[in-house]
Image 1 (tube, rainbow, N blue to C red):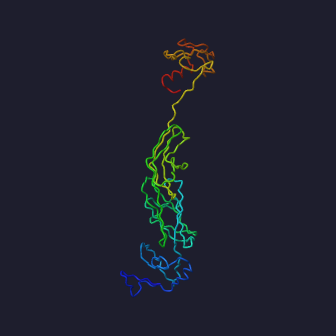
Image 2 (image 1 turned 90 degrees about the vertical axis):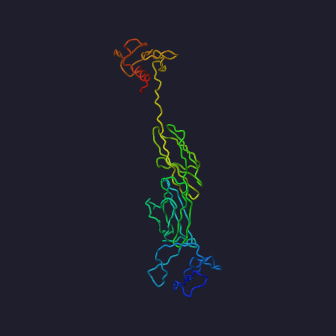
Image 3 (image 1 turned 120 degrees about the vertical axis):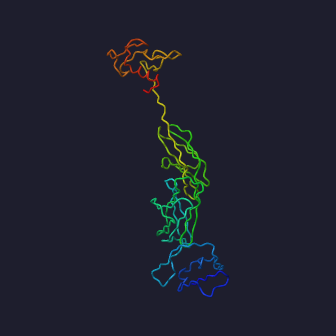
Length: 341
C-alpha cells in the first residue's frame, strides 16, 4: 500500500509512504461495504478521496506487519449514545457504543468526550483531565458522567464523542430553565413555578439536594412540609436526548409556624371560658381581669384554693381573696396582656 502526496493534479513519481505486505483481502475478509483509502472511499464505483475533515492524534500507530510488537485492531465504523439522567443535579451518565461495520462492539478503543460546556467525570464523580479519553470495555462501551455544574446555562451546546479512527457523534445538551420562583407558601405547603427550557421533555426538582418526583410541566406543588423548616429548591431540564441541564438559581422557602391558639377553657357546666363568664366584657361591656362567675373545683383549676378548702365555691367578679391562685384567672390575665400561656 502506497500513499502519494501532491498539491497538483499530477501524480508524483514516487510514493511518500509505502507499507509492504499489507493484504487487504485477508484484513477485510470479504466484508461488504468496506473500502480502503487515505480517508476511505465513497464506494467501489467512485474512488474520490477528497479530504473533508481530519485531526491529529499524536499517537504512534505505524503499519508494520513485520513487527510482531504491534497489534492491529478494527477501527469503529460507527458510534451510538446511551444516556441516563442522574439523581444528582446537573449530571447525566453517558454510554458510548463503538461499533464495527457489522454492528458488533469494538473493544479497547479510545473514546474522546468533548462537551462544549460542563466537565467529564468517571462514574465515581472524579473529574477526567481534558481531553477526556476513556477506552471501551470488552463489549465496546465507554461510560462517563457529564457534569453541567451548579451555575445556570441557557446555551450549553453539544456533547461530542470521537472514536479513534474518526467515527463521531454529537448530542445537544438541555438548557437550564429560568425564572424559578415560589408561590403560596403556607406552614405545610408551597408552589414552585419557572419558565420553560427549549427542547425540554421533563424537569427535575430538588429539595435541599434530594430529587423529588419528575415533573412534565412548569409548575410544582409541594405538600407535607413541616412548619418552621427551610428548603432550598433548584430545577433542571431533561431534553429528548435524556441529557440533564445545569440547574436554575436556587429559591429558598421557609414554612411559617402557625400562630399559637389557646383552646377554649371551660368552667363547671362546660360553659366557654370568655370575658362574660369571667365577670365582665362581652356584649359590649368592659373586660374584667378577675373573678369567675361559676363554681369550680381543684380538679378543674389544677391548684388548691387559697383557703385550703379544696373548692373555691361561688366566686364573683371583684369579690374577695378566695379566687387567689386560680389558674383560670392567671391565664385570662396573660391573654389579656398578649402573653403566651
